[in-house]
Image 1 (tube, rainbow, N blue to C red):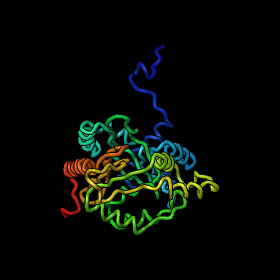
Image 2: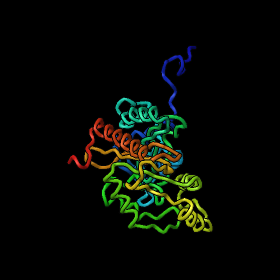
Image 3: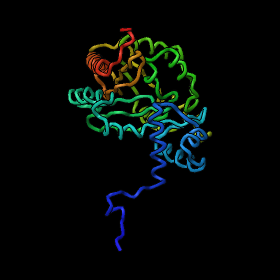
Image 4: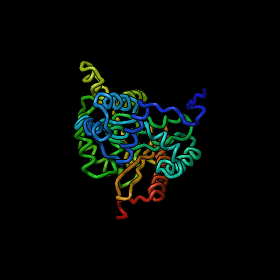
Length: 303
C-alpha cells in the first residue's frame, strides 16, 4: 500500500493554530491601520473569543500588536517593523532614511537612528553606526519621555502629549516647554543635554509604563527626574567656541500632509563646541529634509 504524506505529496502540513495567528495579522494589515476590539475581530474572523483573546494577548506581549487601553482595541505593533523592513526594504520610508543615516554615521562616526510614534509607543525604525540601537525596540510615550515626537507636529498634538498622565509625578514648566517648541521649530533641530545620571534614569523610564512602578517609588523617581534627570534643551544662544555637553541632536521628517512622521537622531554623548553643534544640527536637518522629499512628504512651510 502506498501512503501519501505531506513530504511525498509536496504539500506542507498546515498548522491550524499558526493559521489563526496569520489570519489575524493579515486582516489587520488589510485594514491599513484600523483598530478592532476583541468581539469585532472574533466575529470578522469567525474565531472563538477565548481563542482570539489568547492570540491577541501573546501578539501584544511580543510587540506584534498594540492595545489601546482607552477603547480596548488592537492594531499592528512595532515588532513588525524589522520584519517589514527585510521584506520590503526598497520602498519603506525607513529604508529611505537609512541611506541618509548611514552617511551621517560615516561622517561623524556615531550612532544615528530613525524612530516614530506608533500608537502609544515610540518605536525604533532604523539604526546605523557603532553601538546600533535595536530596530523594533519600543518605548513608553508619556511625559517626561517623547517631547521630540510632537515638537514639530501640530499644537494639538503637543497639547495632547502634555496632558498625558506622566510616567512619574512631575512639575512641568509649561512656559519653558513652549519656548523650546518655538525655538526648535524655528531652528529645525533639537539639541539635548543630560547628565550621565539623567541619561540612565531616562533610559529606565523610557522602557516602563506608570503602572509598572510601585506607588511608593513613583514620587521618589519623580523628584529625581525633576533634578538629576532633568533634560536641558540648549537654545540658540550657544557660544561658538565654548564647549557644551550634548547627549543627542534630533530633527523631524514630514508626510504628504506636512505632519511630523519620524525623528532622525544623532547621538553625541560628549562636550562639543557651539560651532560644531550648529554644523551637526544643520547636517541632520538637511538629512531629514532629504528623507521628507524622497518619500513624497512636504515641509509645513511649503504648504
